[in-house]
Length: 125
Image 1 (cartoon, rainbow, N blue to C red):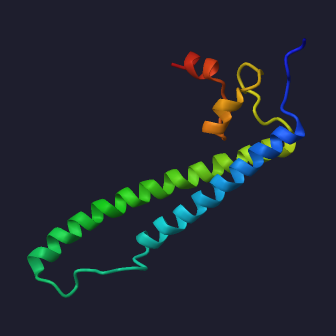
Image 2 (image 1 turned 180 degrees about the horizontal axis):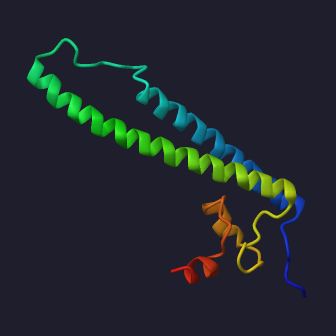
């Protein structure tokens, strides 16, 4: 029996539904991070003592940098998920870009934006 070269339409729909759900969650998370960065829910230290304000401002700067990094990672994740949806519509989803073999469903369920099989991923190390 020949090895499958791609996932069928029913399987692709399952992955599309999974990715759509993850994409929705990721966009909500990103909006929350952006809201934190824009001080939309600000409870600042403008009315507190100067020494506390200075310590709080230093902590806030570090926190804002961390939030900014998280937002960038979330944007990257969203881009990867959107690219996976493009591969689904092109019917190339789930094909390892190195080996050309199908990536196992279990891996795609865990990492739906994967473009490498475990075999190819380990070969990169």
